[in-house]
Image (cartoon, rainbow, N blue to C red; front, side, top):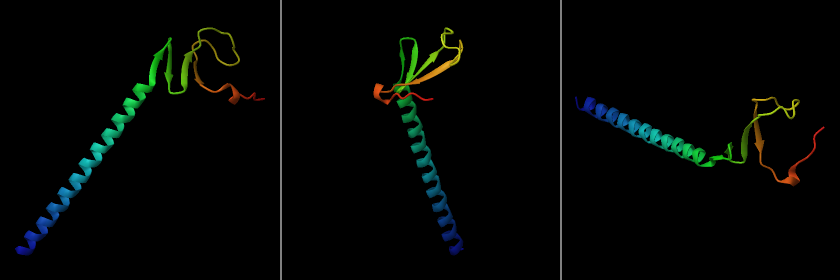
Length: 90
């Protein structure tokens, strides 16, 4: 009987420990998701009818100025660069 009591206490302790670890993991994971969401929200701004995210800007093609690159209605993603970084590709 005494051995059974010790075993039950040990199992109960293990269960409580696992439960605390799981709850801690869930809280930390939730906080990370919340922080990432807030960073995304803060870095996404509405600027002059173009959506920006960090160094990237999103444009919708509204005219057919360069049909070989994009058509009307296409989403174009532009990355902000310094002029010295631009290189011609062939």
